[in-house]
Image (cartoon, rainbow, N blue to C red):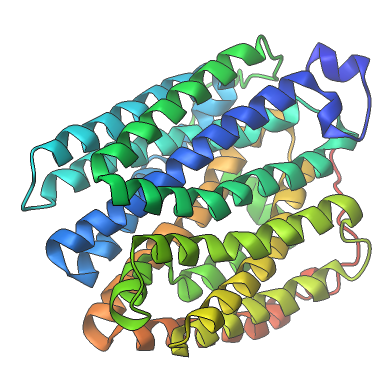
Length: 412
């Protein structure tokens, strides 16, 4: 915990100047990430018109996190987390510039883009656990739940406006989108440097198989944490439909780049409204039941989106998808940060990020491959139905999570 935190033991995360600078860095990084998502997806589909390639975009970013999971968490626990963020942001900025240079060559193939995506995925594999583990170092224990809500709201604000901005920038030219993303990543680096020195409980144990697996071991030992993380994993893995947005925009709903931006932004609208409500009120009781009902609702509204051919209904369904998903994010992240000791927080968050990546990037790969065989509508509707089945099954497999009433940690 930082000296600033000790001097200001408040439950309001805005009372911690270092955390506010961290939040600014996340904002810049979030905008850059969303702009890249829209630009890369649209450009790849423009060139190939193949849903399989859209699925490969997600897979290219997920595999590095999966293959490096034992290393990235240990690095976040052993080394300076702020320095890790700076290095990773610098690599992401270079990747954005590489996309820009590639675009200026007027490509007819997309293979080089996947090589850049792998490098981008490697940088994010180290960035995410270090970022997640750094946040509690900037706050008092009392302020962590508020900080989690603000982190989620921050990300969702970029999820709302970032895709719209990405669509507008891509309309001006793919190179414009990539250039703006690079500038935003540079600003994120400046914000992280501005945070200053941060105290953390560095991992000092000898590196063994046991220490590398500490994150997995901790999650396995906590059934409520395991249930919450795995529920989110399989729900979003099956219900993820974002990779198919270019197909829905161009071929089903027949909207342009700006329309794609609004579709990508719609889940964020619901999520940020829900995050704002959670930041003010939180979840006071019946947390487990609320979680399962919202996961089931996530699947239901994904299926509604999959069947819709009317733009307002599609956007409305996606808004509700985002609202339901935010509840799951809030419960999972609160449990992770309040229950995890700082000396293993990097490794636990690395495992958590692999679960998140599996649910998002691997979910996009699932959607793309199923769409290539059965069509986009079938892929989305089947995924939504699968998510509802997962909610029902997990409610029976993890009764302690279903009956949980309070979100309380056990780590002092």
